[in-house]
Length: 445
RNA sequence: GCGGAAGUAGCUCAGUUGGUUAGAGCGCCUGUUUGUGGCACAGGAGGCCGUGGGUUCAAUUCCCAUCUUUCGCCCCA
Image (cartoon, rainbow, N blue to C red; front, side, top):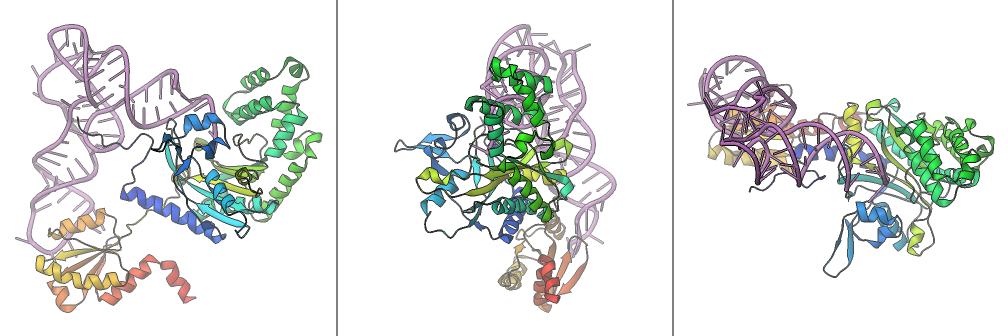
């Protein structure tokens, strides 16, 4: 039986054109976060399993993490997320780092689950974190970075919504205001998380199932609904409005607005899982009704670094998966046509001897940084041109006996079809202008 | 892990009420004066009808299993 050509379930092959897109997206991500002073780090794709047991529930580790035993009998996980790893790294050098840390990474992550659209087993996720700032200036900056990423890809603010909530506030609301115990609060939290997927009657039924008879008699469900129905903070019950976490959220929204971020809003139903977040949580949603899903999210998690036995470090961060980002960009028409990374395709008009001579001017081009591929097949010119075009290369350079003797070469722009004879130094500058048109303009200013 | 849908050419899909040589568009290859791609014209290659089993004189077609894809549930780092 023949070997399958399919990649492993839920994993992806990156053919050059796919990789080209990924490189474009990653380059843009790096450019934007580095504009805010974030520095890139990286870490092993393998971690001891305990790293994930300490923080999250057993269930997640058992069911959704790739785990194996190494030859020394150690239980090893393929990292399903980056946050525990980066927390470990910070804890390891807790006392020698220059706070605040602004760190980012684009790790390859794996989770063992059934693949769906926008959710594969393998993905890449931009992680951006700021360590060592306890005040909301950190939250403000992190949300601004997330917003700047969308802006950097050319998204308009009408294309996405930034939703904010506070875990402190939610905990207070569930535990103190509604009087739920820890287990009930957790169940209701998960129910709130999916309340937009189910109808109201269903929500009520499921909420009541969590409660004790005495709680149902006290109208806890109705009081919960009154909270969840609030579209604005001012619509919340009076007792909740005075909570400090809500005041902070209000300040956050004002700060963001002052920074030009007009598409941020409070959403009391935003839960963002039930793991390590300690205060503000946020998610960014696609406003396109056909893809109305959360694309990325984050928040404050002040407790993780402290799990490693050092003084805790206040932290705010977010993760942004490449698949959801690419889906967003595609559905909004924000993906540019990406030309080949190769600048020039050399078309050899002549025999093997001509090709050998052509390598000399080609070497000069390469020394000047021009990326040149030479057609070494000896095929007819039309085949060589077809190949250049199919590869998406912007320029073709014809080299034959005529060109070699004159030391000027036929440069053809494959987009426009125009063709002109140029010297090697001239070709170098044409390619440089083509590759960095904005820099050429900047230099004139 | 649970439920629904789908797998036919490289891609998007027709089709066979079970019957001999399975089709289209696009793509690919060759050619239309051997120094010029996209367009046009002509020709051509390419399918164990996802895989394995069952029923049948006969299966791409019906049944079962399995793999893969996809939608939803669960979960969401």
